[in-house]
Each structure stands twice: as C-alpha cells, then as structure tokens.
Amino acid sequence: MLIFERNSELKIYLDKIRAESRQIGFVPTMGALHAGHISLINESKKQELFTVCSIFVNPTQFNDKKDLENYPRTPEKDIEMLRQSGCDALFMPNAEEIYPKEDTRVFNFGELDTLLEGALRPGHFNGVAKVVSILFDKIKPNVAFFGSKDYQQVMVIKALVKQSNLPVKIVACPIIREADGLAMSSRNMRLTKEEREAAKLIPLLLNESKLLFKARKPISEIKGFIASKLAQKPTYKLDYFEICDPQDLHILTDKNEVKQGIALIACFVGNIRLIDNLLLD
Ligand code: PAF
Image (cartoon, rainbow, N blue to C red; front, side, top):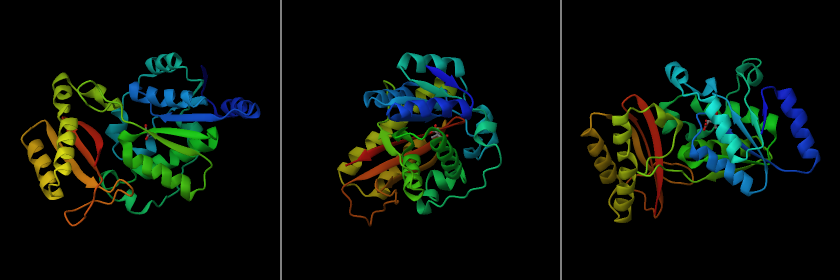
C-alpha cells in the first residue's frame, strides 16, 4: 500500500492509474479504524476498483473543540489494518494540504441540515461537505463508499453530489455491529468497561422500536417508550429518538400513514455521544 501525505504526489500517482483506464474507489475516514471501515474497503475491492482510503480528522466538522481534541487517533494501527485489507493507497494529509486557506463556502441542504444531527451540531454537515468535496476533487473517485450508521451524512453527501454535479457514485454500505449489536464506531473505544456494557441497550431499543412499529403502535407511543427506558438509566442522556421517512428524513408523527420508517437515535453514554439507526418496515 502506498502512503501519500501530499496532494501533488497523490495526483501524479492517481493520474497514472486513470491513464491505465482503472476506476477508483474511495473510502474517506477520520481514522481510528474498525471493521466497519474495513467493510467499505472490502466493498470497493469487491467491485475491482483501485481503492484509496483517506485519514483526516477534519476540524471544520467539529462544533465542539473538546470533541475534536479527544477524537481517537491510532495511525499505526490504522495503517496496519489497511495494509492487511488490501487497500491500494492511503492519503494522510495534514490540515494545510486540505485547507491551504480558509474555506468559507456555505452549502444549503435545506431541511436535511436543520433536523436531527443538523439541529444538534450546527455547522457539522457544512464541514463534512467542505472536506468531502475537497477530497473528491483531489482523488476524483468513480465510486465513494460510506457507512449507513451515519445515515443523515450519507443523505447530505448524496445531496452534495447532486447539487454540485459531481461525477461520483455514492454507495451506502450496511452498518457493521459488534456481537452484542452495538454499531461499530471509532468513538466506542473511548467508552469505559461499564459504559461499553451499558451501550448495548441502544441496538436493543432500536429493535424494540421495530417490533412496536410492526405492531402499528403510534409513533408518539414508541418515542415515549424509548425515552422512558433511557430515563431510567443514569448513564444515558438522550439527544433524540425519531422515526423518519427514509427517503428524505422528514420526521414522522402519528398523522403519517406509513409502511416504512427509519428509527434514528443519538445519545450520550457517559461523555461519549453515540448514534445508530434501524430501518423499520
Ligand atoms: O464519516 C466520517 O468519518 C467523516 O464524517 C468523513 C466522511 C470522513 C468526513 O470527514
């Protein structure tokens, strides 16, 4: 696996790959890799793409400075995992390479940017859009792979690609879960043993919400049930639990007659904020 820190060197190399008529698959990450990230690399390799991964902890998408400082960084382990996965190239730029000058662009994703994560983390998706558009410009992938744990992020990136007319196909890959159901996340490594044990309640509650949805319980009742379960546990602080339309993330209420929804949850376990989701049908 080749490792690049500079745009200029990466560009020369990827131009050669393109000249050989090879297609590029791209997996953008912020490092602290786990099996979920590797599943994205595997999907790219399965599609016989020249696979490029990037590791860049993007400062513009953190609305909380402490969260940025505490974001886990495990570069040696990441490189080893990527080598073993068969990833072809790794781009590990510093902030200067990505943002040589301040990026003042303001994207408009409409309602997508004002609800759920958008409402609780102002500016977050604008920062994601900045870095992803910069990385797409440098790598010029044919296909880019994202994990569905960040369901709203995938929708924002699809909107970005559409409104900026970018020639890249976005593939959303399934959530990879631990044996007890907890969605894999770089943030899980910051949980204490007790918090990690407690966190398995999140997927359990999502599954319960699916059963209730199937049983046609009113959405308000399902939401009340989840909130009351979490309120009983002092380790948890619920940011949101919503059932939305999977197509546009519009928040559903009892008034909506729907056959399909997506349950999305964000909650703190101790000091660590975790998100997860599950399709309901
Ligand atoms: O999902 C992530 O890890 C990040 O938001 C991304 C897409 C790599 C942009 O920094």
